[in-house]
Length: 217
Image (cartoon, rainbow, N blue to C red):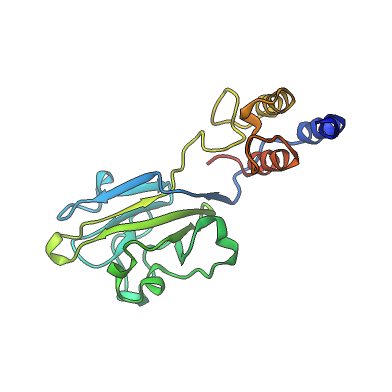
């Protein structure tokens, strides 16, 4: 830890120079949220929509594909040539690898066979919010199910960020920087943000800076 102690004044100066982040590109991984869309329901009602953000409300009618009720009244187009869900772009893969993926419409990913995406790891880009999330469809029903489908996706919430370690939660400010510095100096697990875990080193400092500047939605 001797080398780290020598660098602590520099670390403190660097962290104290951070300002609260504006809304910026964000990446959320994991499949912590399950959405089940029951068949034969009204897609215009909030209870039949997965309202991920103010700009993206995923739903489906009694047939055809999913659409974004926040930006379009119903599914548009036909099969793989549909622009729906408007305001989203899709790719096969995981959100943490988004920079190396090729994104297109949902239709261009399923190529006319939405059911073929069940069990496939996908990434949804919420264009207006500039957010990338993991998605995995677990069910896709045909006409006889009244449009039933289900998927799991990444969770987005106010206290989502690894840098949000001090009250008030949901706000990244000087209190979080101070808490991180104190935790790092004292060997507190709250500062253990990066691999190798259980070891506090430069990787944790870099992870904190990245998380703080990314912000929370």
